[in-house]
Image (cartoon, rainbow, N blue to C red; front, side, top):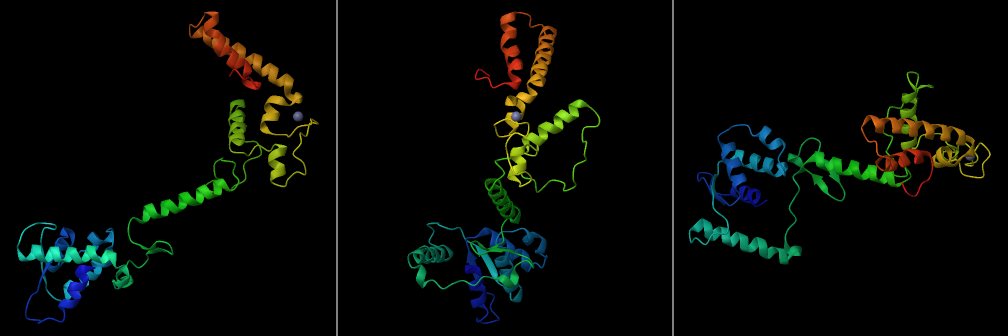
Length: 272
Ligand SMILES: [Zn+2]
C-alpha cells in the first residue's frame, strides 16, 4: 500500500525529474524494475498473493518512470535511505496504537482477477484458492457427517445408478464382500435402517423376536439364524485348524488363542 501511495503522489511532481523510491521490500523492488524493462509480468503475477496490489503498482509504474531502490530494513546505518526507512517504520508501528486515525485503504477490486473468491467473513481471497475451497468442502463434509450419517462415509460422491438386483452373480465370496460393504456403509436393509428411512413402520425383528432388527441382532443374536451360525462357526474352526497345521503351528496352547477367536466370530465374547 505504501508503494501505491508513493507512486500516486509522485504523479503531482515535476515530470522532468525521475523520482527515487526507497523500499525495504525486495519483492516489490524486483517487480517494479522488471516492469520497467517492459517484460510482461502477467504470468508471474497470476499466482501471487495480493496480486491486485501488485497489478495496481504495475499500472502506476508503467505510467511514469520511477527509480526503485532497495534499502535494507531495520539497519542502524546513518545514510538517508536508512533514516527514511526508520522514520517510515516508526509511523507504521506507531499507527497500530491509533487504528481509528488511520485512513481506510481502498481494495483494488479493479485489478483483481475477473473471478475472485469472496466471503463476508474473509473479504476478497487472492491467496491460495485451492486451500480455501478445500477448507470449505471439508467443513461441509464434517457438517453433513455430524447431521446423521452415524459417522459412516458420505454418499454424495457415489454413482447414483441403482445397484443391480444380484450384484453377486460370480461367486459366494463376492456376495460376502457386497454384504460387508452394505453393512459398513449403513446400507444393509435391516428393519432398523428401513424404519429410519420411513420404508417400514417398525424396527423390530421381522422374524418375530422381541428385539430391534439391527445388524448385530441379525448376525449374532437372532435365533432364526442360530443353525447357520453354528455351522459357519464349525466350518471356520476346521479351516483355521487346517491353516495352522499348514503353517507349522502344532502345539495346542499355540493354536488355542487363534482357534478361540475363530470360534467366537458369530458370538459376543468378552475375551475377544
Ligand atoms: Zn430376530
